[in-house]
Image 1 (cartoon, rainbow, N blue to C red):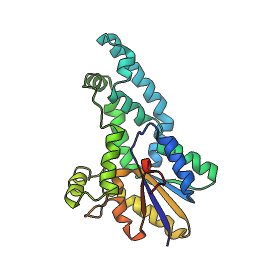
Image 2: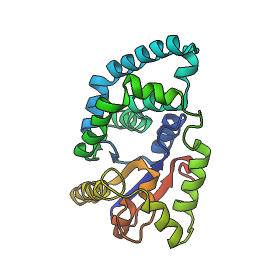
Image 3: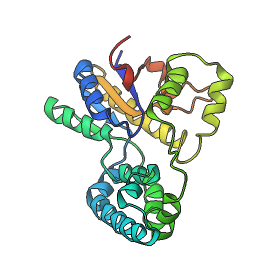
Image 4: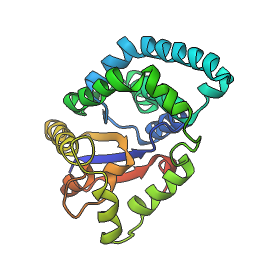
Length: 240
């Protein structure tokens, strides 16, 4: 029976790189797959810095026009989210560093065609003067803090909140860019690797939402249930 571990992360966790490196060292996998597409990696490497430079120029202009401190604009949660979006995610940084040191394969198995849809929005809508002006004038609430996201993850992944709660949570996250097509593709990629190397311990790293059990069988975890995968939330590391 192949050994499969699914690690669920809170994307953009500021301490994620250190925690994930430590967890991988404990698990000692022989292969890693990652919820990231080859196109997303290529885009960040080629265009990330130029897009960040464009963002900084827009912020300079807005600081002068609005009479606000540039540092205040840069620290707005919406702007921090954009910078994080253009940077290499901590999941890739930690996984690629560990894979290189351990001499094991790392595969990016998310769909590039879905990434293309998201990246097109970055090109046409996100880093534009009108959009950034709107964003910096929004209330500085940001998304849920990491602690809150972790609490929700624990409730939905490590405990049993009931079918109705899981169903309502996942209903809002299904679709082309969410739960569904991507999970099916990633599950197929993982199965292919486990069939080819059944003796290996494979670790998959991705967003924790894909680890929620789904009555419709559309999440990654539900599609791989027959392989008895172990689920770990990054904050749990390799503990019980």
